Image 1 (cartoon, rainbow, N blue to C red):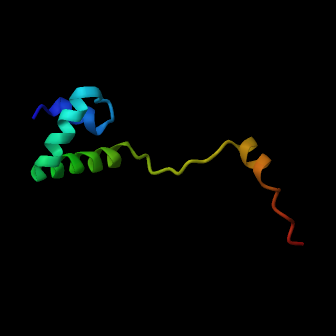
Image 2: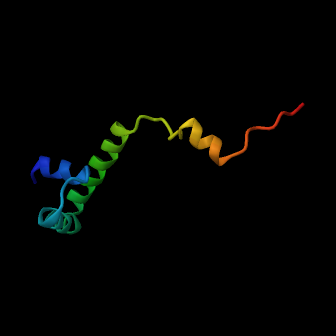
Image 3: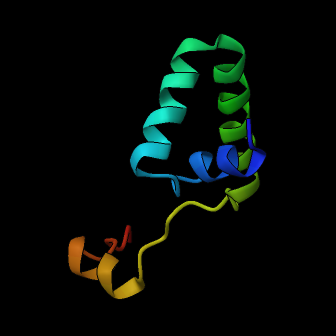
Length: 71
């Protein structure tokens, strides 16, 4: 299996007949399926900056009222 093709698949950049062929291979080969799953998990871990999505301040203020003063 071509490592570049696996990487393209894991990143969602493989399409058309190449993607269909690889998906058939993955379905037929549990070892390959495990490798691809591990690759996707590792890529997710590397690409995750650990920060949650924080909407812009103006977006938040238009969606919720300002906090009330407890005094």
